Length: 96
Figure 1: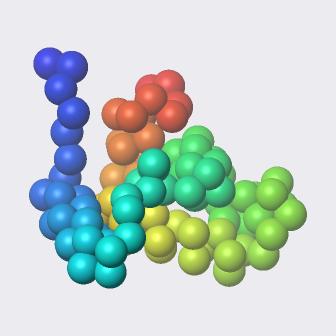
Figure 2 (figure 1 turned 60 degrees about the vertical axis):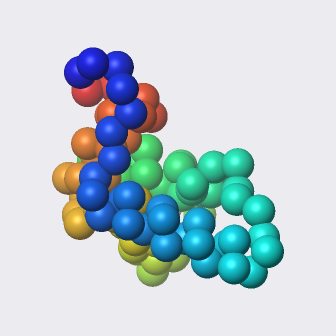
């Protein structure tokens, strides 16, 4: 509300662990936390589409959609579709 960035505590831990793992391996940080495909799936999840609907729209299997969603939850330190939706609104991927 103050225009400042906000991260869930779980996301902070995940980001720190990811950063330390990358630093240990001598790799650089990616430009974005999530891939373009994950962002696309995130938008569709936040808009209320089911895994089957997303799979049909993107011409991929529902299992692939579920894997992307699980990756998003892990990367962002979130627990469920509702938190993904809140995150998408907060970062401006969709309108409330």
